[in-house]
Image (cartoon, rainbow, N blue to C red; front, side):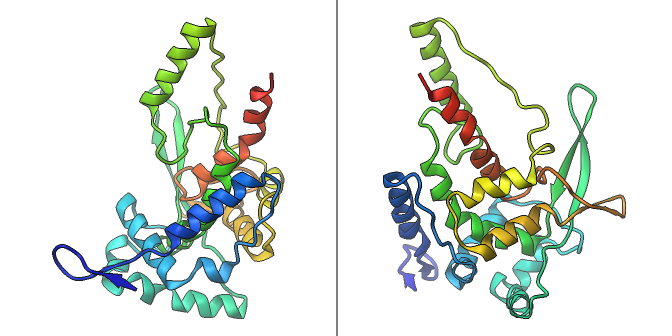
Length: 249
């Protein structure tokens, strides 16, 4: 499906955006509704095209397989995933481990950062397109954090307004938020709004795929890779219980 462009070749339309709006509105109307975000719909060509474009825009280095974004661009996103689709039908398609590197922080500590493979990032981005509107519908209007189209300057303005009207602000910092997430609690938070077992299973596989650091594989029993595509969305979903608690009068 294409539409004419002002310059250059025709541009592909994105049918996933109307679906996102519809799903967000439905989730807003019913905060307890469970959606069936089927995995075969998540990896449709149109959604893979958008996911590949967004992964390229974010950049990033190669994962444990050594495949870079430039390599995927040469082959095309659509050409990279049919083999994974065949593996999925055969039951052998599992996410690859996350390549972990440590980055120094201003206070002298080391912060671990995970880099999934490019192919896993594309599939995760396609999954995020489908489930993000549902997670966003449950957020409080005053919540900023790592939500899309939410930036620090508006949050600072909200804090200033609270100081002017009420005279106090509570500042809470979650130490090691990505590193200390409980996998079972994360699964239950996701299952509150999703009824598709394959999507839930794939999300569990992503957080339990393990990490490779300095050539050594290690299992992951808790936490999610900081730097992964779905980690910001998981942080939003994971913290909605606290938001509801603080919003109570």
